[in-house]
Amino acid sequence: MQVRRTFDYRHMPWKNGGGDTIEIAIAPHDADIDTFDWRISMASAATDGPFSTFTGIDRTLCVLEGTGISLQIGDASARILDEASDPFAFSGDTRASATLVDGPITDFNVMTRRGRFAHTVRRVRLERGDERTCDRTSTMLFCHTGIVDITSGSESARLDPCDSIVRDATETDVWHLRARVPAMLYLVTIVPS
Image (cartoon, rainbow, N blue to C red; front, side, top):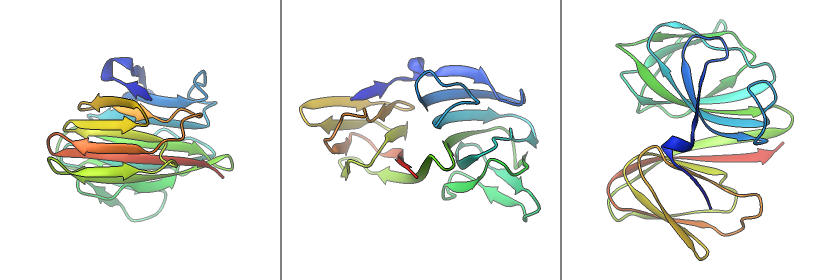
């Protein structure tokens, strides 16, 4: 199991220079912001402004912390996203901008290169003692809050807040989860398209 701790993540500026991002995982591992097949990150937004444009990329955004944002995608009506909102998917090609509802936010982003990969993001809430199995299609699990024990075959690990686990290409075992305390998780599945 590839467990990644918060200190393993790479900190870098947004593509458009308008904020900071924390890169959790990227493929291939030596890719950069212009050449990735898929990328998972967190970002902090402290001011209103445009999103970076990612041509040929499909994106999903989730608000992790903060009151929320009003997200304007192209000419569509603005959409309010907060911690309770479902993961929101949109095209990275389309002009997008955000207005903060009431102060800074932190968001969770998943991006895949269209025509090569596709993705889904699910929010999973576990209460203390809850157990869940994630099948072999699961690519990555991000523990936003709480503490979760995870086992896969003969391996086991503990995920603390903001830790994650990424499936190795050769790993075939399912992930078994058990929450030590209430936890909020984000389960990402990435598949060839």
